[in-house]
Structure formats: C-alpha cells, structure tokens
Length: 204
Image (cartoon, rainbow, N blue to C red; front, side, top):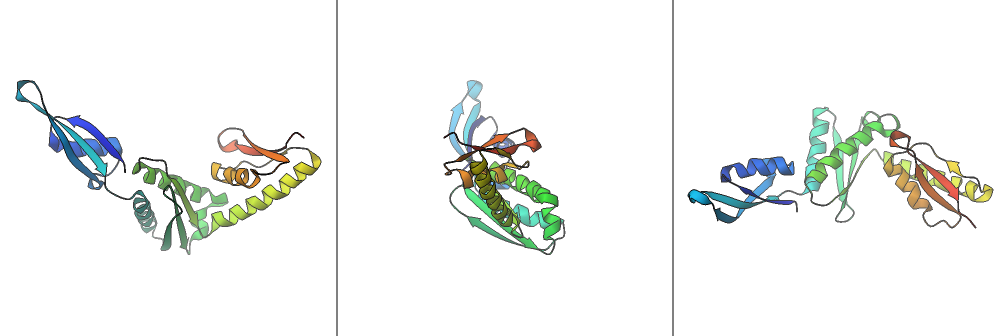
C-alpha cells in the first residue's frame, strides 16, 4: 500500500500536501498523526502518515469505464489478476476497430494511460495489460508463429534476421518464445519507435 510520512505545521493542510506529493485524489487518502513535535515559542509540528486507501486495480477499472462513457461507447470490461503485480482488462464493444486503431496504436495509448494511472496508486511497479476485442491475444499468436518460423530459418542458414519495429510488449513476446532455443538468440536494437529485434545464430 502506498504511503508517505512527512512533517507539517498545520494539520488541515496535510491532505492537500499528501495528494500533491502522492499524485492521488484526496478522497483516496487517509491521514494519521504519528507524533506531535513541540517547537520553539510553543509552536507545534505534526509528523503524519498518508496512506492510499484504494485498490489500484479498481482505480484502473473505473478510469476505463469513465473513459469510454466520455467517448459515448458502450463496452464490457472484465478485470483479471494473474498474481499480485499483474492486472489485465479485457474490453469488448461494437467499436473495437476504432478503439484498437491502426496497428493497435490507439489501444497502445489507452494502455499507456491506464498503466500510469494504476501505478500512481501503488508503491510497487504493476504490470498492466489492456486488450480490446482479443487483439493482443491474436497478435501474440501471430508473433509467436513469426518468431518460430524466423528462428528456424536463422538456425538453418546461420544468417541473422531483422524484424520490423515493435513496442516493448511485442518484443518481450518474441524474447520469451525464443529464450530456450539453443541455436538462436534475440537482441534489441535501435531507439524509440525504430527499436526492433534481431534474431541471430548462436556460435557453435
């Protein structure tokens, strides 16, 4: 649970200060006075602890709901937790192509936004996945097929193969798929949107 300890002169200012420092809405913060500290001339400082009192995953869910309501798009959202640090939101609507965007760019932006919101409410880095209409599941299968086919070609020809630029999530899929191959290895190269994977033969 995300927490912050600090000293403050006026207790009524504690909630506003904590909200600014934690970057969390005031309604989701509890304030507890840990100690009263006497200062010179009978003035008093307070040592307080601010604690975020909401589940980050629920914040992500509500944010998605509000996002699509503002877009006036009816959606069904299913939230799943794979473990303590992985949260996924599966979205379906009649406007899936619009929400996914060309090459998944709109979906990628939605995920980036939700991931930042969710992690602002957590004291540890959470893995947040947003999928719309099963796009990412289908893309994962396609990438795994591509990885296997390309790796076989590289292992046979001993000539490295450069793949198209991909985001970190897609590169990780291929890294994982080929991580236990004995004949090839994967290396990320390039910067920014040009970052891509190269599948290289291992030395024998």
